[in-house]
Image 1 (cartoon, helix red, strand yellow):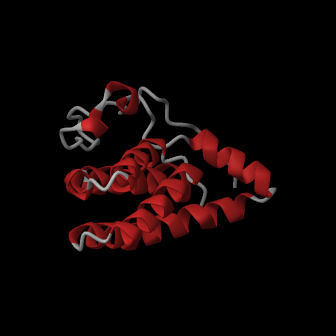
Image 2: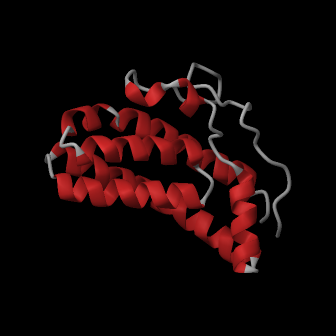
Length: 153
């Protein structure tokens, strides 16, 4: 069960409209550097497979990430709705780290930006990014399912 193929940074990398890619909400999260990040970098998962010395463990981590995506997103959105900075910070850090571990570089960067807004106490601006988080998170899960989780089953 090893990785075959990869997603390049150019493949669907832009935040602009593309048939299978989400568009970002306007604002700070949609800068050019972030748009050039791959939605999913399969090399990150390959590194995880090698570090764990067992591809099935990395596959399970990616499956669990995909399964838990909606709960992570809902937890973050609810915390922002309640203006609960501590809960929002906890949720966004979890999202950032887990996304980076599965190669979801674009979502991880978006979560990092959201974390910065929360730490500054700007929950309104953070709340404005939640639609972009949802779009990129769902797209990240789809890419994982299409190109990694199901590809090796």
